Image (tube, rainbow, N blue to C red; front, side, top):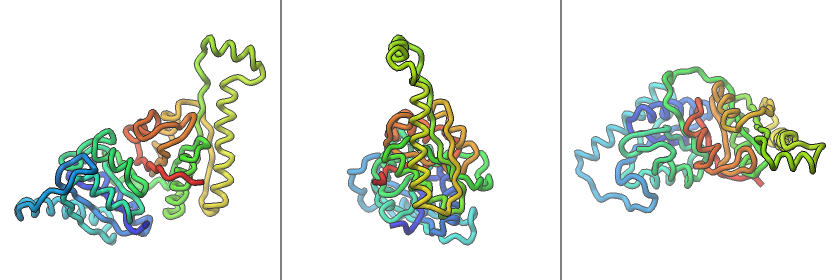
Length: 295
């Protein structure tokens, strides 16, 4: 485990951004980079690989893989980079490569054999089944933006959020980045139920309880982070607003936003859920999705 950074490349602008980000991240992590181009029947994890292809077609596919590796070497000249060509179901091939990877990196959208956003079959299959954290990179207008030295992670007190905190702490430790731990809360909308609540609990409004829950989620994060990653420079924030909007705001000035695939309360949801799914598709910076809980 934890040997390489792996990035999927298909020649699309989004995969170009993914390769460049993966190269810079691999250099900061001190890991070699595998640039993987997969051609075959896209979409399903259980589709068998295609049979032997003509030498002409295979050579063309190899040129795509080599092109991706050249982009990585251009971004980081001294980085060890390997061009990898796979034949078969793209999601299955990428998941197989995740077995020995530190990170699996994908573009937010794609074309050809890696087509689709996170709602598409390949990226969705990789996010759900990868054996390492998956980073989804948006297409950047300026791929050469300097590193901000900042990692943001959303926590809500759940096991999934603690897994995200572990991934964020590890990345921050290996890259020397500062870490910002964010919890969000919002007051419930006014309703008839709210009026009943206020009558029954006059000393604790739903908004106050939501704020308290967000603050309570920060306490174990502080303790666990201090004991597990004591050398990480960490700050903590509790902001009012929708979790998607709060985290997206912090992501505007970050190198990486880290979220878990499961949670409760304000940060609940699978990759296709309301928070994680929205951030993967809309955040300004790359989003790391981890589904590994910490007990």
